[in-house]
Each structure stands twice: as structure tokens, then as C-alpha cells.
Amino acid sequence: MYNLLVVDDERLVADTLAETIAWSSAGIGHIHKAYSAMQALQILNMYSIDVVLTDIRMPEMSGLELIEKIRSFNKRTKCIVHTGYADFDYVRQAMSSQVVEYLLKPASDEEVFTAVRRMTEQLTAEWSQITSLQRASATLREHTPLLRAKLMDDLMKGKGFKDENLLYRLDMLQLPFRKGDEVWMIVVRREEDFASLDIESYALFEYAINNIAEETIGEHFDLWIGEDAYDYLVFMVKPSKRKEAQRQALGQQSDAGTQTLLEHMSVQFQENVSKFLQGKISLVLSQKGQFPDDVMNLYQNGVASIRRVVGNDQEIFLSLSGTPQDAPVRSLKVLYEQPTLMQLLDTGKQEPAINKIKAVMEELEGRWKDSHEHLMEVFFSVSAAFLYAAHKNGTRLDELLQEDYEPFVSRKPFLSIKQLRDWALQVTNTFFEDLNRHTKDNKAVIISQIQDYIKSYLAEDVTLQTISKHIHLHPVYLSQIFKSETGENVSNYVTRLKMEKAAYLLKHTTDRIYEISSQVGYMNPPHFIKVFKRTFGVTPQEFRDA
Image 1 (cartoon, one colour):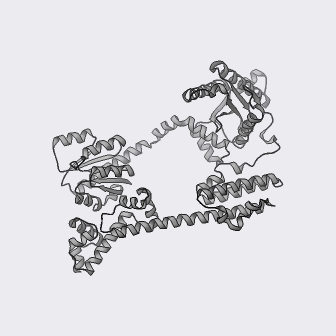
Image 2 (cartoon, helix red, strand yellow):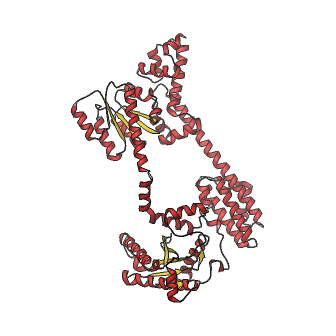
Image 3 (spheres, one colour):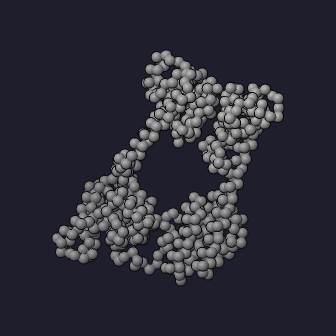
């Protein structure tokens, strides 16, 4: 559904067009109205408006000037002129401003409705073209390097993917890696030569390094290029079909031949960077692992080796031996896979957070059952997530948890995985109960404030904008909250209260129709009569007589 803005300095015209036409049939979901071009600009700054229906001759700023301003920041907004002037100069100016419809007053409701419907149909066709497969494919190709790097980053951080989901992403990004493939990771640290470069030069050198890697290592291996949070370049490689010819030329048929070839190509890559870019790099070639299960461990081994082995030395090449499983002590995998527990609590996802805790405990039970240190690692990590989420929500964790806060105070470790699991799940449930209660209470307060304001100012021109200024919330958010909690649009609620009050006054007072119209915020009695009849099916006088 689209948003329509009606602009006319004649309030009766604007009100009638906005409130008496069944716009939903034309694809319009929300109708806004403005009584001047300046007021229209304020609405355009707050809302995403798709179609503008405007008069031309208005004080302060004409409708054509308004359209020019609209064109300066949103060329897709459809503009319709609705004016009583048929002067050729106006028509010519409207055409130069890309006005797509020109209606002469008094245009019938059907003419206005049809013009707006044509605009929504055009918008639908345009957005259909924008989101077409052809355009999407072109955009995908343009952003493929970034999307590839993002997927690798997710895998290096341990983010899990269902097999079919990962395969879809790999195919979409044209990456020749598949589950079970033998892979290596190369972690590249750029040395001080590159640190002194400005941002633009640094980016160009990064591009050049990647190209050298493609030309050197990519000669015999499929190469997937990425970058991590430490500003290291990371290459994931696997033997390509072309490696067979190289193996035969070297007289090697084993995995050791692949490792030797990869080491040779990595050293050649390092030398080419030094030779052609006059820059130094250090790189670590990981052990062999399986894709995608070992990617995180392979990467972490590489980064750890740069920190522990390469250290401050420069232009070092290091090839790790063995497999990722050879290290005697390892951290938990599921605990640090994205999304982490901290991220799930921060975004208010209760069920995924519970599932995360259960998965961590299952890994702890399965691999580290007798490790007190791993039990402590989980406790401290989970505790930090709870403290972060509680403080960000403005809550003291000790006040929230009460007796469940005791482990933070005593600092006594849990004696079993089951105790830690039960405690973590209980704290999670308590956290979300408090969060949901606060969310519900906050929404209830907002709804009450909105309703109180409307009832207090029912005799005035109550709009979403005036309410939002009083409540200090953005009109779009205010409208969404009201609709989700009450099932009714704000404008419909305002109209309903006005009509209910009008009906009461008609039955219980002798006030004249125009007086009642004024008391419920309608300065134009004919417009009030039209809205009343649309609501009750009879005119105010017929309602009173009945």
C-alpha cells in the first residue's frame, strides 16, 4: 500500500478529498493532508510519501514550487496537480516539473480516484522492474566481493548455516567450495610499510595484493578472499582441478604434494608483493581442514600463530603442521558462534537465546564434561551477557534476579553442568519476563497518552502530527504502536470519537448542526455532514429526527 498527501489551502477541499474517497481501492494505505505547501514539506520530511495531489495557487509557496522541491530529494514521488486554473503557462510549468496528471477543478471524485490509481499502478510497475531478477543479478555481481567477504567472516566467527542455506549462498556467489572439501586458510598481516599509507592508497594496495594472490596462488588453487576485524587479509584455498597437472609434473600424488605446492605458491606470493609493491607482508598457512566445519579453527590457529610465533618479526612465512584437532586445549565453539548470547539478549530474541544456552551446554557436556575451566568459561561468558543486557535496558541485575544473583556474589563455581544450565535458563526467563513487562507497560502508557490527548482536544483539528509533538514520538512509530495495540488507525479513532460525540449531542442537546460541527472540530459544516453520513448512513438532521 502507498502513502498519499493531499495539499490544498482550502481546508474543505483537502478534508473532503482525504476523508470521503475509498482510497484503499486505489492502493492507498495512509492519507495525509496539508493546508499549505510549507506544511506539506514538513509532512514529506517525516513520512515516505508516494503520491502528492496538490493545488497550484497557495500562499507562501505555490504547488509547482512544492513539486520542484519534491523532485530535488525524491524523483520517484508521483505528483498530480489539482487546480482551478487552466492557463497554458501553468500546464507548461507542470510538464517541465514532470507532473504526470493535471486535473481541473471541480474534478469529480471518480476523476481524482482514477488519477491516483494510475499513479499507484505506475509505482508498482516501476518497483517491479527495480526488483526484477535481471536488475537484482546485476546488483549482485557488483557487490559480489563484499558479499563473499561477509560470508567468509560469518564462517570464521563460527556462524552456523544449514547445509541447504550455505549451498545456496555459495552457488549465488559462484564460490566453488562444498561441504567436505579439503581447505587451507592463509592469514596475511600487512607490515609497517602499509600502515603509513593514507586511506585511499591503502585500499589500492589491498586491491593489488588480492590481485597478486589471484595470479600466484590462484594459478593452482581456488581462492576465496576476505578480511577480518584485525585488518588481516584472509584467503581460503582448496586445490583446483588444474593442480593434478602440477602434481604430475612434480611427481607427487599425495596430500603432502598439495601442501608443498601451496607452501611454494604462498612464498612466491609473498615475494611478488615485496617485488612489485615494495611492501612487506607476513603470512601463516594453516593446517588442512574440512569445509565448513573447520574454518573457524583454521582461522583462529592462523591468528594465534601470528600473535604467538610471528610476533613483532616482519616478512615471516609460517606453515602450520597437523590438523585443527591436534591442539591439546580448545575453547568452546558454540559459545562464540554468531549470533552470540549477548547479541540475542540485546535484540530481544527469547527462544533463540534459550536454544543457544541449551546448545552450549550440550557441547560442554559432550566435549568438556570433566573440564572445570570450560565450565568457568561458560559461566563468565553467560554472566557478562546478562549484565550487559540488563544494564543496557536500565535494570540492575541484582534487583532483577534476587536469589538467582547469588553466584555473582559468592563467586563459587557451579559443581555440575546441570546446575549451570538450570541457572542460565532461569535467569534468561526472568530477564525476558521483565523485558516483556516493561515493553507492555511502555506501550500502554503511550496509548493512554494518545487517547487522553485526543479526547481533550476533540474540538480541534487533531492530527497525527499534533499528537506526535505532544507525545514526543515520531509520527510513524506512534501510528504503528497505536495500530498494533488497538487494531485501529489513529485517524479512524479520531473520526470515530468525533462522530460518537456528535451523535450524543444530536440526541441530548438542541444545539444547531453547525454548532455541533464546530464542537467536534469540523469548521466546515458541509464536510461534517458528509463524514457523518458516511459513518451512520444518514445525515445529522435525519439522525436527530429518528
